[in-house]
Amino acid sequence: MDRPLIGYLRVAPRERAADRPGLDAQRAELERAARERGWRLVRVEEDVRSGRSLRRPGLRAALAACRAGEAEGIAVARLDRLTYSLTDLAELVREAVDGGYTLVALQPEVDISADGGRAVGEVLAEAATWHPRASTTVGRALAGRPGRPSSTPPHVAARIRELRGQGMTLQAICDTLNAEQVPTPRGGAEWRPTSLRSVLR
Image 1: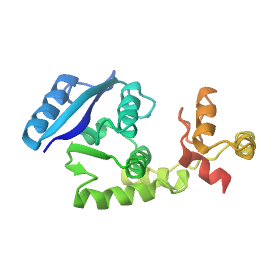
Image 2 (image 1 turned 180 degrees about the vertical axis):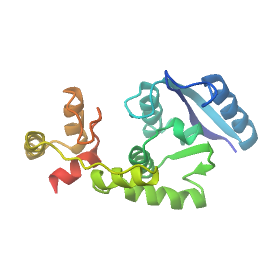
Image 3 (image 1 turned 90 degrees about the vertical axis):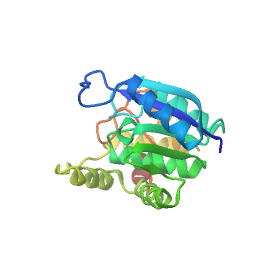
Image 4 (image 1 turned 30 degrees about the vertical axis):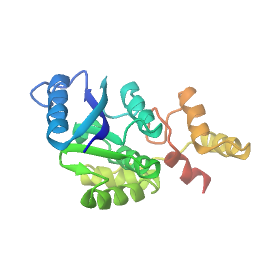
């Protein structure tokens, strides 16, 4: 079995080595899994950035490779190497399901193209379509933290509707807002289509 995958590694600048595996350790785990499971690591992308944002060049390159058909999916040693956010994870899974590629993690054992993983993937893909405020609240509740209400400022909402009225796609609107560094309703730096749907309803 020759399964082409993009390996993805990430460490945060302030992570302690005792808490999270370093880049070399993650690479070794993926290479071992590739030998044992018949994967072919097309290449390995890496980031030294926080997992609280998806605006990472290595991750974007890995996603672009999957969208272009260069690989069947992305493999990580640990699921939290992709993201710390339940909302962002749901969005990544939705994009993978829609794009026809997979996400694979060694810890915990997840492969959204496998039978059990497919069911998890469908649930997370559905969660990605929820109202951003609701999904954020769910994520905080699962993490044992209280939810905090958030909303899109009226002037930003008006601009989003104006851009949509001009025929722009949701992704094009996101790219515009990201380029202008307009904060998201949750205070983040990156807009995604799911962030716009509640405004446009």
